[in-house]
Image (cartoon, rainbow, N blue to C red; front, side, top):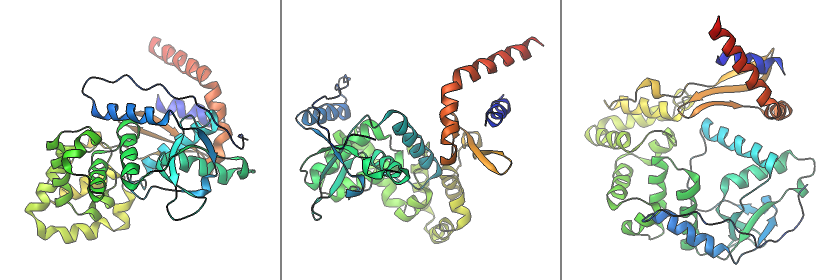
Length: 334
């Protein structure tokens, strides 16, 4: 079935300079007792008095607090998907920035890093980059206020992996936020906050960052790795050296985790849960797209050179799917 779809694919081979608005998204309905959504509602009320302005994306710097690990191929695929969405539909949700504390006429992001990166890439690829702007709220924020806003965004929209949430808890601690105060910000119990720090205290940060965001690897697996590392400190130096090799870096993040935990005598995940590597679809030497199955479904990723084909595909998907279901029905009747 999948080969048939790929065969079908290979055979087919200025925004305004300034704007202001007072329109605001409606705050989501909150389930009783949800601290993350309660914080989100308050953030939306705070934004109600702000205006949306258009900013040069090249005059904006990232938050001083790092919340995501963006080095993985999967993170790149997600970023490309967001960029395609912005190109097609525009930037629907503004980012939040503050005036840069040390650079005049520049800004620092509080949240919206992926949207900012998408707009920057679009500007870099545009024939008229001076017409590409980032829609943003601008507000004076202290470091504590900035990290608070960033944490709310992470809880509601950014979908951090378990280990990214642990690293973010470490950032919160660095600004003086106590573990008890993190519970409402992160939307977890005090016991869960303690587990986050248990892993951080046992697994070196260099190892965590070498493994990557480890999407799909949750608390039980990370706690097991922490316990195995505590029990075998003599293996740590060798494991750290392994994590810096090119062969290790060539694996996807979940497989890197599996390799490390096996090195310490732990249990790797079921191999059926490990995402398969992307398959390249080519016409001669020309790359058409990459196809990948993972736990959430089947994904196609198109290189920049195939933007026109990707657009054509989205416009003709209904007809392609109709042909596919008809062929499937014919085969079932044979």
